[in-house]
Image 1 (cartoon, one colour):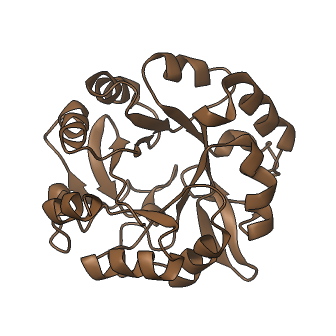
Image 2 (image 1 turned 180 degrees about the vertical axis):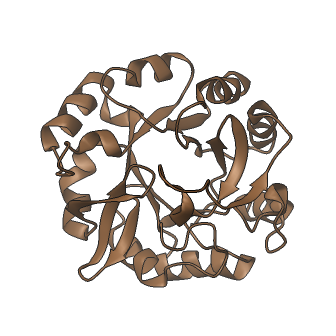
Length: 254
């Protein structure tokens, strides 16, 4: 059964919703759909009260460590943490109360080539149960290619069922943003959701483009209930108008 997984996206120390493709190191700042005056701890506490497990905190760039710590303190053991996670700091974030760490960019070398030894080493250090692999991707000629560095850089790793099979032994679940539709509220990447649902050997959370409860229902239908979903910019909790937060709380209570 598809569940709603909440998110706390952090940028410059604030809880925000950002159009994924605009988050770049060069040029103007990212396009912001929403900037909250409420603290990360406020959101974490709310998700905790409403029993929304499997939430993730993503640090989008530098300057977010203190904000992330606020969230983890509000719900120790209840939140995953991602953003600049590597072999050196993974245990630190787990020690601060993260249930799992989420890793992407560090799994690739300076030439943007996947380094399987890195995922093996990290999984061995912290245990597969504490590791979530983020395979957020962009559409390419070959279907989907994993993108790192806040979705700016294409790597040599294709997102396929074979890739999921290859990496599944090292992690507890996968997080996958459809970077091309992230933050646009124009609908999900249906082909990607269907592919992820056809696999179904580990928990998978999909994020990107969900604009209404119809999209949430579509994720469940296309994946046969095997893929969970994050709703960001369309959510009224984040200033959107397409999806009501309370609707999703009730959805999870079915």
